[in-house]
Image (cartoon, rainbow, N blue to C red):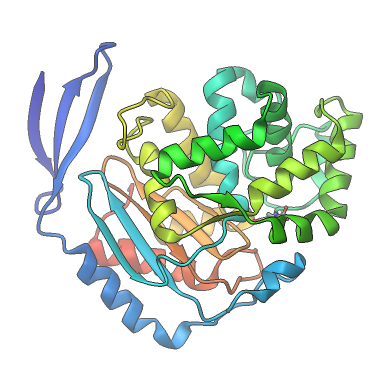
Length: 337
Ligand code: GLN
């Protein structure tokens, strides 16, 4: 049964319908009167003088080889359109953006038991901090800081015989790109400089919150961070979240509506580490960043947007990426608020 109606006039038409399991779902039919290509072209042109802002991550030496002048934006909408500008088709290291994929895969399989292993509060600390783990007994604050992501990768290893292949399969299916791969040069470089992540993993193992061999864990984690994708891939890959848990490319339900809501809430509150509050304030969207300089964000029921600019601010988030997303929601007059 369908009911078609318009919300936020002049922007989006939605259809309300019942799925086979009786769930009420909302589908974005068409973004009308909003020329997203024109919007991102204008932002891209206005921000040319800001290219190269921030500092490219160098604590993983392979990342320091990235050209700081890169800048790309891509939007994928639920009605099947793509809008792109700049270096939107140039691959880069997704780094912590991968934490959304591993979290979704584990949440899908173990459901609410996930909250025994990881919390859902912002940490207020840098992404690779060890401080809270001691007094919070090895339970990381959330799945998007390194400690929490290591726990999720540990669970992935327990759940799958071939966790790396399972992860690639998942990302290929949500992005619609079968060529997505681990950049072995970046993975090796991170493995050689993984002392802090090793420390986090050993520490959590002492509390019983890591079940697998630490070397195996660090290897899988470094590979997941070294996944090579571009803005077009990433914008498409987050559409299943914008679509309340259903992959619009093949209609497969990946997460329940409730799980998709929860994942989005954790992205909003924790996706940009100790800058998450400021990002929510400025962009008003659930988002996830990585030290490769990418940020992906989405408007539920509508679209997903990926930005890449490698220069980072002191929080480890893309300086121009944050500015771009703030400007985007300001220009279109739409966010989750
Ligand atoms: N691979 C990086 C690390 O573990 C990911 C960090 C990030 O993108 N914020 O340090």
